[in-house]
Amino acid sequence: MPYLIIIAAIDKNNGIGYQNDLLFYLPNDLKYFKELTTNHTVLMGRKTYESLPKGALPNRRNIVLSSNKELDCPGAEVYSSLEEALENCKKDEKVYVMGGYSVYKKAIKLANELRLTYIHSEAKNVDVYFPKIDYSQWEKVDCKDHTKDDKHSCDYSFATYLKVKN
Image (cartoon, rainbow, N blue to C red; front, side, top):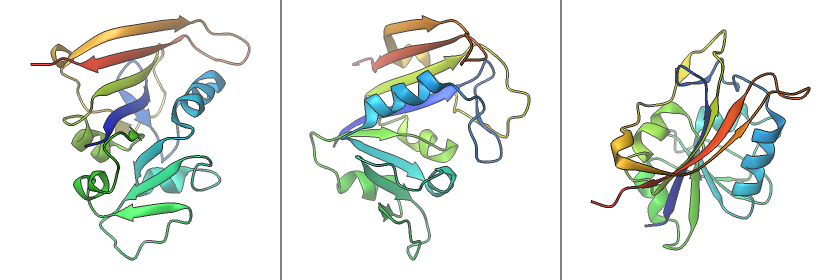
């Protein structure tokens, strides 16, 4: 199985999206996401793929999960299940799971690592939430705090967790 990493930006109430869009515009979070995922695989659901302004993300292998086997996602491979997608990845491949809710919910049980951006603010409108995390299964290994500035409307933190070995 490939090395599976969940990557998400979540607000104070675990919100991750509204009307198929991000809750906050944080340039440093977008830059961080790009730095981590470039030259790796990104795995997402159909709605997340459709929310990408320019389609498939460049310099990454894009995988989309959809029950519609006829779905056309230019620049991406389409699989009907998480299991099928992971079977088509190499053992040493880093796969970043980037949403949405149902994909996160399935993948979190299999994930090796969490890369979470905690947004220290509450979004006005939210219609999608990140699945509840059992933090007893995870060890925080890094956390970098950032304060709001002229480009970032709120404080945020980049946190990394590794799955606890049982």
